[in-house]
Image 1: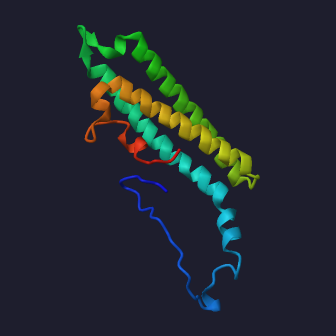
Image 2: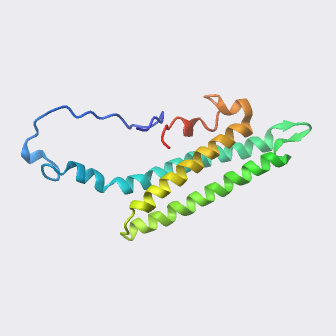
Image 3: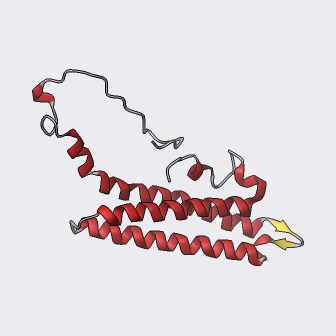
Length: 159
C-alpha cells in the first residue's frame, strides 16, 4: 500500500456480501484472474512515480550543492559531493532508459512478467539510493519534513 501524503490509495477490505449476477464484473469467480491480468502494467506504472520523486531529490541536491557554502566555497566543489551527484545522474538515466524500453515492450504487446518486475525492482532500488544520497548532500536539512528532498520518496513506503 502506498503511503504517499498526496496519494488517494486506500486499504480495501472485502466483507462477505451478495452482489447481483448482473453486477458481477468479468464473470463470477474471475476476480483474481482479472486483477492479475493488470499486475505487470501496474508494476510498470509504479516506476515513473518513483523516477519523478527521485528526479526532484536530485535537482534539489544539485541546487543545494551549488548554493551551500562551506570552507570558503560551494560544497559542489568537493569530490565526494561530485561523486554522489554523478551517481545520482547516472542512476536517473538508467531508470529512464529501462522504463522507456519496458513501456515500448508493453506497447508492442510483449510478455512483461519478468521485465516489469525487474524494472520495478531496479527503479525502486535506485530511487531509494538517490534519496539516501540527497540526505547525505543536504546533511541535517535533508531529513526535515518541510525541506527534506528525500521525504516524498521515503514516505511512499514502496520498495
